[in-house]
Image (cartoon, rainbow, N blue to C red; front, side, top):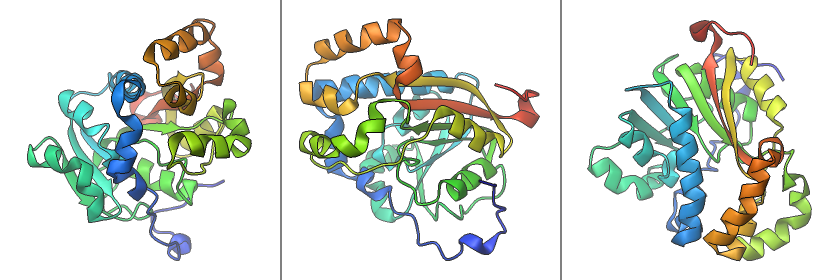
Length: 258
């Protein structure tokens, strides 16, 4: 799938992307409440810190970050972060962070970002690739406004997610407010980013077992026991999900391979 120019009007007919709105709610935040939620977020937070190690004092654009999970981490790391949502209502979970001056919030169209080329050092986007209507246009815009790198998260098709259509009913019973989602192979995402001039410089699969299973068990000790041998045997690296990966501009780091 070829990259589209920012001036290409072939996407002008697309409706505004609003898949971020369910994530900017108290109901979504409850998915990560309690000890098991903190366990899941802990893995994500450590991975995010790892992905931002090459960057210091960066300007960051968080696309779809109104779940308010990344902004506090980025603020702690000293980055100046702008969270972009599709509607003012997406600022709900960020209101305390914005009031404290720890991040900014803006609204815009994900397919036509209101920023000039390479306006931010880094773009970060979690949860969104699983739900956006046009992955190609979304990545066009994310990479267009990123000067140094892009950190993104996606569900891997090499994991148990290959059974997602069959297990959706069970997942819905466990989580209550889940949605269908699209998955990607790591090679597919690498190719998407390479076509846009970015090379992968790090990648980390978070869990071997489905997050829904951890929520159903609701026992942090059991989750640690389940995940440890898979991590040690490198099964998580091969078949884990979701994946968080860092991509950097090839014309900045002088590399053309990953």
